[in-house]
Image (cartoon, rainbow, N blue to C red; front, side, top):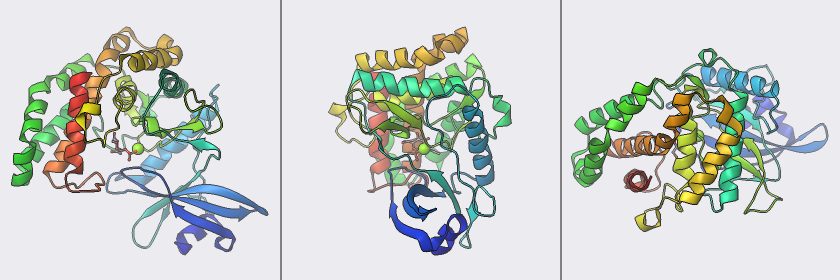
Amino acid sequence: MQSIIQQFFDYQQLISLSPFGTGHINDTYRLEIVEAGKPHTWLLQRLNHNVFRQPEAVMQNIHLVAEHLAAQPYLLKILAPKPTRSGHWLHHDEAGNYWRVFPFFENTETYERVETEAQAHEAARAFGAFAKALNSLDASQLHPTIPGFHDGEKRLADFLTALENAVPERLAEAQPEVDIILHNQLIFKKIADLNLPQRAIHHDTKINNLLFDASTHRAAPTPVGVIDLDTVMPGIILSDFGDLVRTSVSLADEDEADLTKIQFRKPIYDALLEGFLSEMGGLLTPAEYSALPLAGPWLTLMQAVRFIGDFLVGDTYYKVKYPKHNLVRGRNQLALFEGT
Ligand code: GN1
Ligand code: MG
């Protein structure tokens, strides 16, 4: 790691380096280093270039969004990248990996699941504030860094291809889930046919992509910042509200194998809706507003399609901790879909 760290910092000043976080895609490290005589903490991250095929475009998006947020009346902290010492957003190392550095916000914590209505309200308000601050950014200035990322019809088409190329034993095992997906596939066309406006969208508004103030009460915490801007790109508002619903309304997170723990908590949903609308309400078009109830089911089914599709072809996209991990996640998402 020495030569990588050296691109951003004076390596001689390094205090510590340790793996950090729970993301499925990138590898993240927490780095402590002395700068101008004082210890500072940063995040060093390897960007997964198998997922993000245009790393430079990802960084341009993040930079543009960070600059735009900074020019708005936006109160949350902004995850602006730190350039290399030679002025680039990325260091491309000899092994072909791409590295970048972000600020580390001290005294913050992330939650893997929502426990109280106040948490749900504040989380939705924070992502709503993020969307509101980006309302004035022309989405066509952002690169679609993962083409068709939340295009349900494309995800379904890819899933049908995965069915054709499936590992036979895996297909046999996932057949009930495959049937549920095929049975419900029309929701993807229904949303596409609405032709909702393209906006600058976060696209990964899971609850653990929010930093909360660690010194406030866990039951009713204060959001500090929206993180993980890798998938900021043009999209529809249902992506951001939908992923909030997907990751917040259930008692269990997406890795939970015990399906009895998966339930739709209506009071949490109501708090999400109220929190999101408290920021974005006045900016939604009538079509966006009336489609909001479909956001959760649409995004949750799409996530099931992605997990099961990846299981079928042998886990090539998501990091897995055990052989059936993606199947378990997919079953979990289908149970949630059926509850939404
Ligand atoms: C991935 O890496 P992470 O956890 O931030 C994925 C999201 C999925 C999510 C499911 C680029 O996000 O789209 O919703 O896993 N990101 C990408 O947990 O595919
Ligand atoms: Mg992410």
